[in-house]
Amino acid sequence: MVKKIRSCVFISGKGSNLKSLIKNSRDYNFPIKIELIISNNIKAGGIRLAKQYSIPYKFFPSDDQKKFERNCLIEIKKRKIKFLCLAGFMKILSSDFIRTFRHKIINIHPSLLPKYKGINTHKRVLKSKEKYSGCTVHFVTPILDSGKIISQRKILIGKSETEDSLRTKILKQEHKLYSQSIIAIFK
Ligand code: GRF
Image (cartoon, rainbow, N blue to C red; front, side):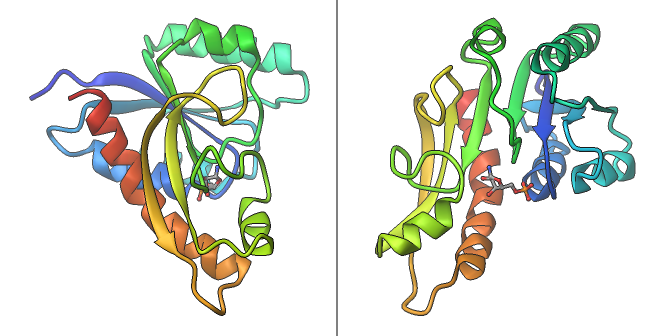
């Protein structure tokens, strides 16, 4: 069995990417083990998943960013975490925090970066009448959604596509892409 890298997933919402990571990480050869889940939203669906799969989790409010990051660092150190995955985590981490984990934090974003960084991606993609959209897994750097791209998946936008249908279509791809990207990083 590979020696799995002790990892933490940061979430804010539903946690469907977290769920696919949890499932795939149970695979014998998957390079990471999720040892901690951190949420900045007490109502995040991902917290239910943490309980369901008996993974240690912490809720830290992030309105005070310094305190939030300090809490995260304590927990990360305590659990000897070496790799961080952001999965629907809706808070921008400070440059200092990101630099502490240089090349050790990745994120998934629902667009074909470098296009459509930031929020409300699907809405903006549809408004611009793009033919394609997709998702990207990238390393996190202090500049939002701008770190080195690890991998992408492209989808064709249908004629009657809505924000919801596009979100669903892309999320399905995200669930595959995130795990594949982690495998690629540690190959
Ligand atoms: C995903 O589309 C992710 O790319 C974006 O937020 C969404 C989170 O979905 N950053 P979930 O919480 O993983 O279901």
